[in-house]
Image 1 (cartoon, helix red, strand yellow):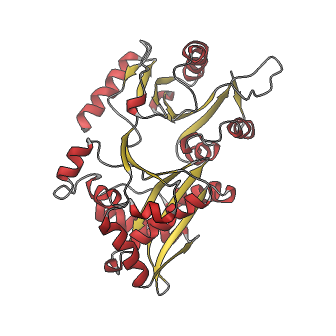
Image 2: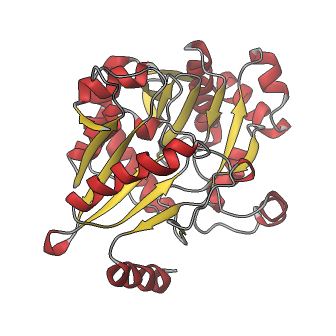
Image 3: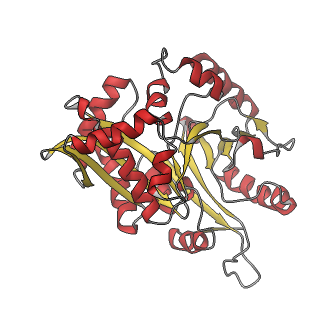
Length: 337
């Protein structure tokens, strides 16, 4: 294993074309500007050339007081079942984490919970995921008509209503206006919003590569809703979305989301990830979504309409280097919940 540059990492990812968004080099560079340090590790052969069938990962280190860090490995493009990975790979990872004075390393596997059975003694099952563990994914391999047919009738109706009521959707690049809309949405729905500079950096890093689009839904030229969608390989992710409080009866968010799905489909994606719903089983979600509005419950009502499948990612794993400070972290997380 060796630490590689951004250029070398992108060469490695060419052999892992379906890598998760959070392992893309651009994501690491985005986070670099906001308190994180990306470190990229790739296995090398005797000739020190990057090998097609070898492993690698992007680790993000978050600065903490006293020169310490928190290590975070989001959705690595590795198979946890390979014995070689269980040994040499993690030894190399440990070395890098210790050099960066990590209290612990949090790993969020890029697999679904019902497909994951890896938990050696060197990991602790984490009580805390950084990314929302439960989501809804939509199969978009079929025709537009088939995708629409799998949606809830009300969602399908709202998409058509938006078209009839004069809503149009187009690509957009007005990040200040998008941020302003995000601020309105965050205040209304009570979630945190990144800075304008964060969204601008994300757009500047991903959009030139064709792996991101900012879409806006308008009525008579007036922006009503917007979202930022990302894609890599066969997967797409709806990550940031916003709407203001105007003309909501025209259902702009429904047509906007549908056009984002069509954008992902047009660039060859098979799966569209709606990125985050309450962490409850589907029976509980369906029983309570009409009466719950806290946390992610409000967005579940909207996202469920698009006819996807509720899935839960594998629980995060923690690899501990400083047990005392890790214990303090667990106490802090426990007090917040």
